[in-house]
Image 1 (spheres, each protein chain N blue to C red):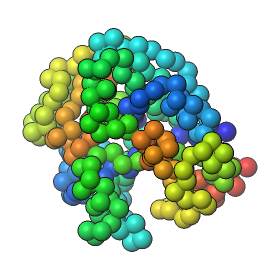
Image 2 (cartoon, rainbow over the protein chains, first blue to last red):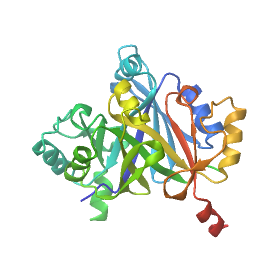
Image 3 (cartoon, each protein chain N blue to C red):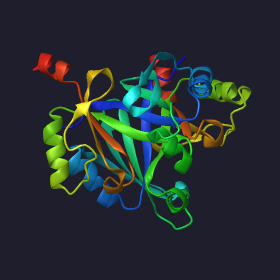
Image 4 (tube, rainbow over the protein chains, first blue to last red):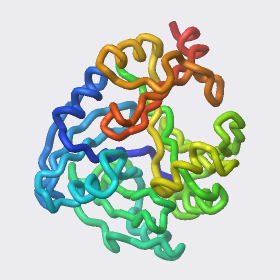
Length: 141
Length: 141
């Protein structure tokens, strides 16, 4: 089963306020939510574009993963997240192909999704997230 | 008018063959076209995911922009392209907001689209492409 769509694109930014201004005033998008994800040490701003979300990620602490990312690489696109069904099976397939899993089992992410990351060293440089909305998949099936 | 969707995400890769294998065998996507864009010195592989395309970009020459990008930053996500209407007006708005335009006027890109790039130095690190399908917009209007 192929991913149904790109659930979101994560973008690492220094300042939510400044970046939101670019996406709203220049691109004409509208931020519909800002949320703090404490265990990731980020504040996130969401925009809907077609069936995909942009998630701007601002670090809330100096030792957070986004802070470290920006220190090393500068602001920019951080990851791509695919909406999949049967995330456990996808992880198994990835492992069988020698992909390095950051999460061997799915964990809970924002908006109640089950998520897991694949390491960019084994995905040709792209930090790749799989996410599954188990509530929706159960309702649909 | 906000962008209707993300037209594509450009991903810089060293080898189309190896990367296609990841996207097909691990993620379950299917490459539906490979195209050479001579003036960009790239070969591009396309995948459809929901209303967005992935475009894998492999350099065909050592001095090509994708080759230089990979040399500097490694493989990874290269740009995000938004499907817009009235691209000229969007460029004007961007310029009025002090955004550095790589293309002051739209030029022809792949698949007959009118395209223009905004410089990542003024868009918080994201090389941003605007594209307009003028044929479709004319038919719809």
